[in-house]
Each structure stands twice: as structure tokens, then as C-alpha cells.
Image (cartoon, rainbow, N blue to C red; front, side, top):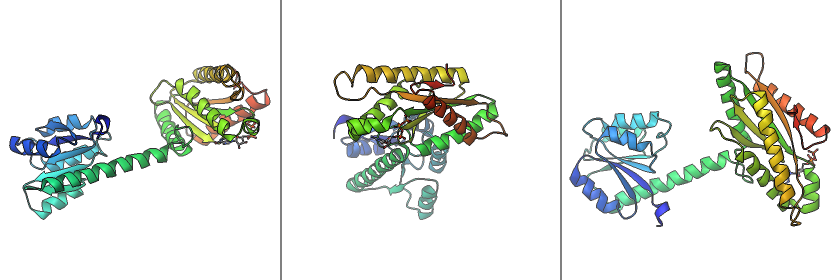
Length: 302
Ligand SMILES: Nc1nc2c(ncn2[C@@H]2O[C@H](COP(=O)(O)OP(=O)(O)OP(=O)(O)O)[C@@H](O)[C@H]2O)c(=O)[nH]1
């Protein structure tokens, strides 16, 4: 196993003999992070190891409580937890699993079985993470998909209403893209869409900003706490960058079109009278104005 692929395991165990045994069994295949009490474990868990091996009986916190606290924190909620205990009580095991642990190992355990169980849960977790990622991403460009955008728009709408803060969206649509495909072929067309996504993504600075693929050759930006002037200025910077990128590279080498894009912006302070759909309709109408006004432009104009 190469170093970056070595799964990181948080081992929560206060007994030195048990710790030495775990290190001997797992040390070769895993990077072990050790915590000898619950408080340290909760802190180290926020570095998000791939799995937590948790002694049921810790000096400062009971294993059940620990598991519940891990589940309650969004940062650590998805980390699989395996309990390790000398207790053979089936009620304890049931309680532990109900509290959110994925497995339960009783001492004394076989080294091979412990390794196999951990490996199974690490692989399962990796597959779940990959599926979650695929469910949120657009396959061609790697940016968020429409579903993520719709969810995030609802969330930011509610947040904007509570805080009375401006919320902006920008619709971005590649210009005359049908002729790009017809002239250069779909593979070049696909590469152009990736290029547009890269140009737009490079200009997003705040963690809450979102770029998503909205449809075929259309993207959308969601900008919380952003007023109309800032949204238009951002759209203008992206418009310019797309124009320069495609003018400077692809065409000169005869590899692609001199592509541009049009932008429709909309801003609102969310309230009861309006809706996310209405905000998108305004952005769409402005995009239409940008197209009919000659393309390669931002509406409302900066
Ligand atoms: N290569 C590629 N093309 C796509 C993809 N999705 C949509 N398209 C193409 O994008 C083109 C959009 O064409 P139209 O809606 O007619 O608009 P347009 O030619 O861009 O013209 P304007 O928007 O008016 O500037 C269609 O030819 C679609 O096939 C994709 O994922 N890859």
C-alpha cells in the first residue's frame, strides 16, 4: 500500500497492553492515531480518520455517549466506529450498534478477524464516500450538479431571509455552442465546457459560493451575501477571462473555437413575497437579454 492510501485509524484505548497489541496487529497497514481518553478522541476525530476503534469503557466517558457525540457533530458523524470491549453482554452490543457503531469486537479477538473487519468497513466507507461524491457532481466538468444547486439555493434562501442579506445568482450560457459542436465536434465541445467551468471556479473565493452545471451548456453561480453590483462585477470578470482564455489558446493553435459566454444576473433580499424560482426567472430573463443584446455580455450591464 502506498503512503497516501494508508487508511488513518483513530484508536481510542486507555490500556497500554491493549494498545501495544493493536499497534502490532494494525501498525503495518494503517496509520494509527492514538487517544487514551474520550476528550482527546473527540478532538482528534475532527481530523476525520477513516475509522475509529473505540474502547467501550474509557476513564472519562462511556462508549455509548462517545458514539452519540461523534454522530451529533456533522464533521465526525459519518466516521465508522467499531467498539472493542472485554464485555460479552449482548445487550451492550445491541446498545452500541443502536448508538451508531458499525461493528462490535470482543476481547480476546483474533488478529486476522480484527484486520478483516476493519478492512471491510474501510472499503465500505470509501465506496459510500465515492457514491456520495458522484451523486453531487456533474460527470463532465466535476462541478456541482443541478440537484446540489437546487438544495443549496433553498438553504441560502432561508438563511438570507433570516439575516436579511442579499442573495445573488448568475446564469452563464456558452454562446453559439451548437455551431461549436457542429464545427469542432463534441469532444472539443466537451473540453470547452470544462474550460468555462474552470474559468468560473477560479473566481469563486468564498466557501459558501457555489458553481453548478445547470443544464447542457449552461452553468449557474449561487452567491450568498452578495449584492447586485458585486455579482455583476464577478460576472464581468468571468466573462472576460473566458473570452481571453479561448482567444489566446485554442484558436491560435487551430484546436478549438473562439468561445464566449453570456451572463444573466439577479439579486434579491429574500422575503415572504418572493421565491427562489422567481429569482431564477429574473436571472434567466437577463440571460435572454444578454443573448439578444449581442452575446458575450453581462445583463444587467456593469
Ligand atoms: N459537447 C457538448 N455539447 C453540449 C452538451 N450539452 C449541450 N450541448 C450542446 O449545446 C448546444 C446548445 O445549443 P443552443 O441551445 O441552440 O444554443 P447555442 O447554439 O449555444 O446558441 P445561443 O445560446 O443562442 O448563443 C446544443 O447543440 C447541445 O447539443 C455537452 O455536454 N457537451
